[in-house]
Length: 110
Length: 110
DNA sequence: ATTATATGCCACCGTTTGGTGTCATGTCAA
DNA sequence: TTGACATGACACCAAACGGTGGCATATAAT
Image (cartoon, rainbow over all chains, first blue to last red; front, side, top):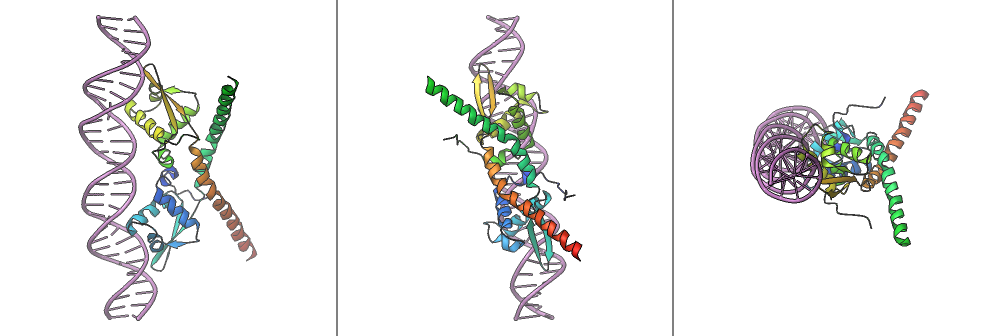
């Protein structure tokens, strides 16, 4: 159904701060060409392009050529994997909260 | 309030599959010594220990010496950062759903 | 007392990562 | 048509990563 050309682990793709910032920037627009993204970073065009390619490998970004520029668009769908994964562990910090409360109550009663 | 000895980015810590498996294993027990974790992986003790240290740097794991062994315990709390981050983008795959529907409707009406 | 176990620490090593600069090519503007 | 712009592709590089093995030490078991 959805696009699964994921040759790269999504967890891996979002590990880098630059790539997370790219995701954020792309979430603010419909479509942005490489050169426009590049000016927002303290690094060369080649580096930004590489990061975008990694995001593309993870399926988080789609690119499209328009004239001489390549425009990038966010595809947030693969992030569901992350959400599913982390949702499983939400129960653990909840129960830790409960356990913390137990300890506090015990201390009060001593 | 909570423990913030995070010298390591949580996104970075969970990027590695071995470390995610460690998190999963630790979620199944209260506390597990290094040697017991080691036997579950196809790598040496040193490698597993390194991964656990990285998780520790991210605050995802707490260790405690008991006799000659070092026991590790999961602390899922820092994973909230991940959840918060990804939650922000959930609206994007939802709106993509909506946009997909729009496109389908347009096609039908043509 | 001796031996086995569990670990930390360190040196080492090949591969990946995240950046650089350069060159060739395609496209837009004058 | 000439020149500026946007990009891809490539070689290169230092640093980080993910693994190894060996050694020293503390604890447990015999």
